[in-house]
Image (cartoon, rainbow, N blue to C red):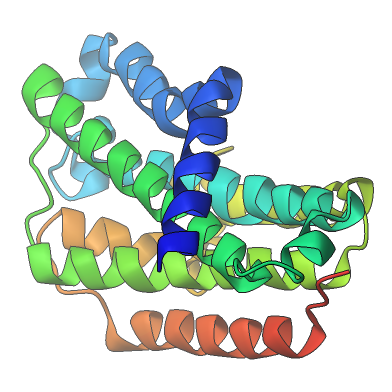
Length: 244
C-alpha cells in the first residue's frame, strides 16, 4: 500500500505538471461550452431537442470529448511510453509492481474525467441555465459504464502497442470514431438516423448520457452494451498486456 501511495503521488505530480494535457482534458469541453453559450439562440428552447436548448442537448457530447481524450488517447500513450523506456520492467524488480503504476494511471484518469464532468455541469447550469443531470442514478450509471468501456479500450490499445508511436497510431483512429459517433464533430441531430443509432451503442454511449441528463432513464440495452464492451476489452487487455 505504501508503494502504491508513492507511485500515485509521483504520477499525480507528473500529471499536474503537464499543463497542456490538463487544460485539454479538463478545460477544453467547458471552453467550447462557454463559446457556444454566448450565442443567444443556442440557449433558447427548441422543439427539435424536445423543448431543451441546444446547449443542454450538446453538453453530453462535450463530456465525450474528455472521455475520449483520457481513455483512448492519453492513457495508452503514457503506458506505451513507460513500456518503451523500460520503466515497467524496472518496477517489476521493486516492491512497487507495474500493476501499481497501472492502477495509479486509472485513478488519475477517473479523477480527471470526474473533475471535467463536474465543471462542465456547473458551468452549464449556472452560466447558461441548463439543468443539471435530471435522472441522477441513470446518469451515474451511464457515466460509469461509458467511462469503463473507453478506459478498457484504451488499455487494450496499450496492451498491443509496443511503442508510444504505435499507441498513437492505434489511438488516433479510435479517438476519431468515438468523437464522431459521440456527436462532438457534428451534433447528432445532423447525422443520418442510422449513424445516430450506431452512436447510441458506441462507447461511451452518448445517448444514455443525453437521456439521463434530460430526465429519461437510459435504455438498459445501451448500458448493457457498454458493460459488455468494458468486460470484453478488459479481458483482452489482461491477456495481451506485457510489462516489457
